[in-house]
Amino acid sequence: GDSVTQMEGPVTLSEEAFLTINCTYTATGYPSLFWYVQYPGEGLQLLLKATKADDKGSNKGFEATYRKETTSFHLEKGSVQVSDSAVYFCALWMDSSYKLIFGSGTRLLVRP
Amino acid sequence: DTGVSQDPRHKITKRGQNVTFRCDPISEHNRLYWYRQTLGQGPEFLTYFQNEAQLEKSRLLSDRFSAERPKGSFSTLEIQRTEQGDSAMYLCASSLGGRVNEQFFGPGTRLTVL
Image (cartoon, rainbow over all chains, first blue to last red; front, side):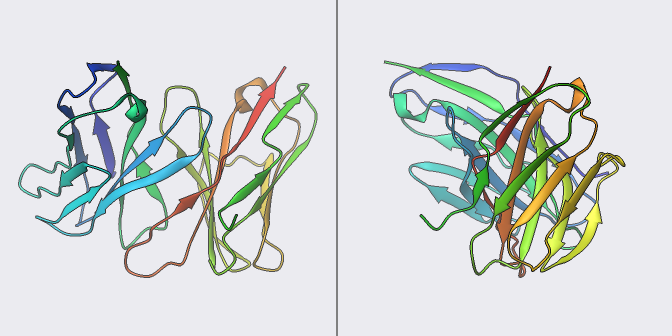
């Protein structure tokens, strides 16, 4: 079945470091891809999305490009801040299904 | 605040008791979803409503679980005869539907079964 695999965390970085969180997917068709973020004590928030191959989603300095050839949607940010510390979830959605399928999440800790 | 709201935010119950959670979606959203999230895992789909019709249920949703959306607005999720394995965060989301189904999540209800 359809699935999402994320790199395991925690990822610990110093402020202003470059961030990459890997995400790959398995799907029978052409899904839409999402990154959600969950700050401590809060609900999931949509961070960015991409709906077709080669689309780049971006928001708040974060970017991810939908790569069909490698079935990937890696999250990147050029300079992280302490306030970016959170859990990041990659997810996919198919036209034929109602549900989002999530990866297991990657915890990011940014140190001052 | 016009986001998705859930009530209660926390619930502690004893094994065998029944619990009910409520979700109020964004007002113009006709689609509503329930997910369950356990510690260290991503959310897992439980069930989906389009207006008042429950269109899909996960096999995770055992016979002890029931969900309703009686007037196509708020929804309730009831768990009967709770078990310790039911301890989790229960998340509600809503969306407008359409080609790209962007779902907006509530803060969740954390259930602890003692």
